[in-house]
Image (cartoon, rainbow, N blue to C red; front, side, top):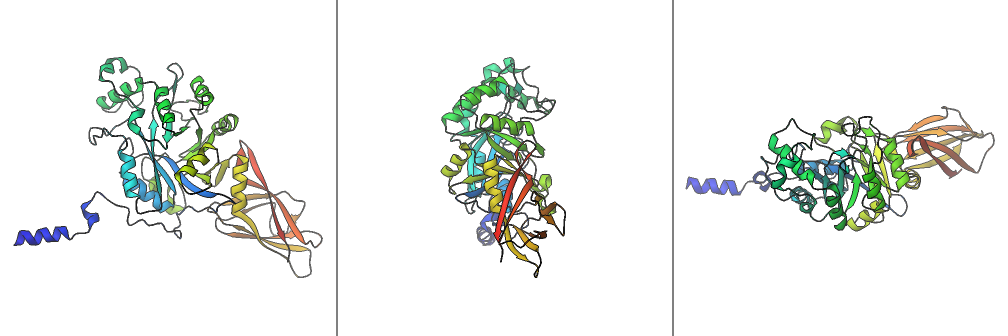
Length: 415
């Protein structure tokens, strides 16, 4: 009798307590201070994405469900768990021959939420010109991660001296990494392209692979770009911005990317509870579908949001900023020629602006800020009463090429 009662009690427990974990407590909440919100430019939907993340299925420190929970809390629209295919430090604790498992775990966890999870992986090589090795490349929108790496036990001795990264870890892990690195990176990249994947170069200025911290193209990268096998490049990775990577993107028609590359908790690394946020790629997509988002990536319609910076090609940045900023109201103070203008910001980033007009600002200097989701009131000396105001502004935190900022005009009829 007691056994039957105990069985009944166990069966009546909430299902969540009997599973590995869910994200049911993390419903999207747009009122949350950490929820990332940008308005849609005309004709597009903003897809907030992080396409470079890790879990315990490679060298991350959390289960995939945690990555999904963080993404839901941050208001992301799109995420990919891009595990190192070759570097598997937990492979003896979490044996998994199927490299698609993190994607499957993530997709299941996100099934009750408005979050798109796509399959992705990180093809992991040293940056080595001698071995024609391109460094780390992410492939997203892949169909089968298992086809992007190869382990041949017969090549263990051949591999012993080729890999330097991670020598402080368990020998068998390094052995696996060394052997899988013998398979030419180009083979993995070809397979990813055959699967229709979007490929981008990760952290090209990483000092572990570029001691001077300067991103540059090696012959292998030039070859990949020429053959249309490489489609994007990270200008932001974690806490680092590479102007050189941005210039490479502009010069070679590569999509501008920014990612968290998170291994720990988002809350530890980016402190959203203190007003921080993960770096994200804002994708200007014609629809909120995988097909449309993928098309937008291949067509370079992205803007990276990093701290308070917006970084991308001029056309994309201009579309986004115009959607974020507007003159909310404009009217003269009594019978004077002093125009009171309210500028409204509908986004989650602060805007730093410089007045480029010949008008002087009575209550500020030529440099002013519009807070996120807020307004600023300017009193402008127009000298004569106008029927329409045109404010020419430099958007200091909107970067359209290295050391060059976006110029923007805001206009409003005066009541």
